[in-house]
Length: 99
Image 1: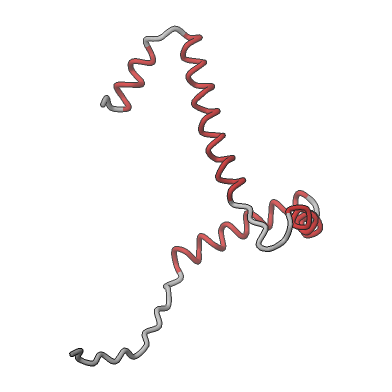
Image 2: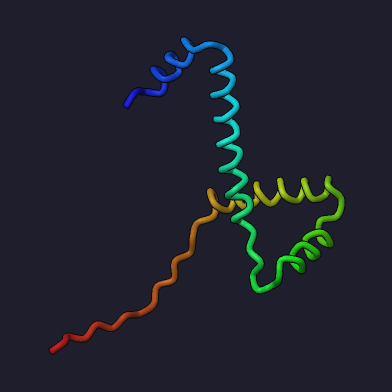
């Protein structure tokens, strides 16, 4: 298997229209993968899809409010992920010898 640098060097030798096609389809594939994960992240959680959409539209507010809330939520989750230690609860376990 070739390294990425060798592959890029090989692509530079191709004609420009081939490079543009490769760039387009690569970008399309990456965008499709992101879109697929985005779609898969939605769950109805016991509601039907129509009710979920209605609830989301009602809670969204303006696009600017929604964007600010999303960015704020992302950074809050990231901060909690990095800086908040997980609390582990241990319970007493009694081990008795078996027969």
